[in-house]
Image (cartoon, rainbow, N blue to C red; front, top):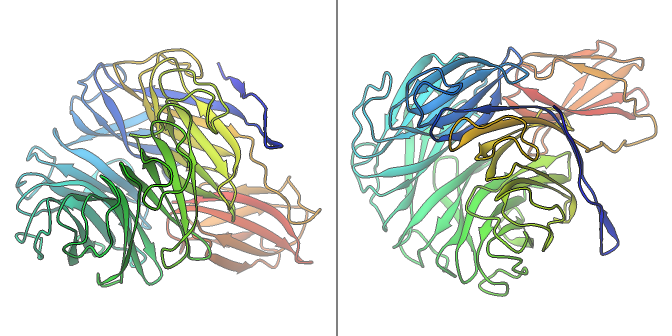
Length: 523
């Protein structure tokens, strides 16, 4: 049964913080053991989704394949299972991305040679790239490895239809790695072409342990973010503040080191997400156990472990920083940030706190999904929470429109709170489609909410029904880059050249008024 959840309305510093949300549908996926969400959930051209996960269960619950390891689940637009595929007995899916040709790339960390169609023997632990179609069939595969352990790889698609992969590497020179190890572990960054062939690789590190957690492409290079326990040594030219700090490195398109920045306090600070802004600045976020006014951390410590977000300019200099959390812990699991419109953001992860600090929603179990909507200065506009009576961990938030989102994570809860389906094992994958009470502010008084945009998501063509003659359309990607289209009454535009992802579309009338704004998804 669908539930409406109205959070308490609290008055803090004369600002009303309220949230309202509704669950459109939800599904639980799993067997009698442990299931994890890995890589999130992506749309398909048929209107459904593919869930990237990991399973330790055999053929039981609603798991119909016996493979343990990487588990892909194809579902329809209501969450019903269409197909399932397994890859690798001992592999872990690290990244899962849509490609411009309608297919997908899997980035898997594995130390096994029991992976389906894996043509190159594993050394200790390596990176396995697998291109698949929309029903999970393997199109090609590549193995990337050094002579020692490579763990926790991160992958992004690049503007030239290739890939950038970065991994925490314990290897020195050998096999695919062309540069020496500097410390216990380093950042190892690898640029690949569209077929997975290596174009260049770069090793970056200090004398201790350094690990990559996030990547993003810029117009003139790449940003590599992660954590560092090293001082000045090797290629690291910035000092360490605590046990582990945020460490961000900018590379050119051919892998040369341009600049680097470090942020941290006196304890453990762990970066998990990077976002490029319209003004070419950055948002970086993760979790922190450091005290306020230690190192270059200046925000108040709210609990045992907080979300810590820093806004930077295009050169990596701090503009502001904020902490979010309650009296308990908001750490240990990934914290991610995505844009909402042109100047607002969603920050999301999981929380163990009740009402305390700047958390205004009571907890339902041991750990709940927690979503914050922020303005451009990091102030909380609204917050939302979903959970059952046990532990629930949010790992991915996929925007379908400006107000509906697909949430995916892991759940230990049975039927309770917001969870309406019983669990299958000790830990399951939990996916919800929700409507949040976000409303787009019109740029003038002529915005017409009856305009319909379809299909959404789309692969090639966007159509729209309107009583108003539309003159132009502007489509903005998540980095603020705009693509302009002249309409002249056609009521459709071809978006086939856009790379897969989420965009905002603005429809402009003959007088230059914005009459409609909506989020669209391109696969």
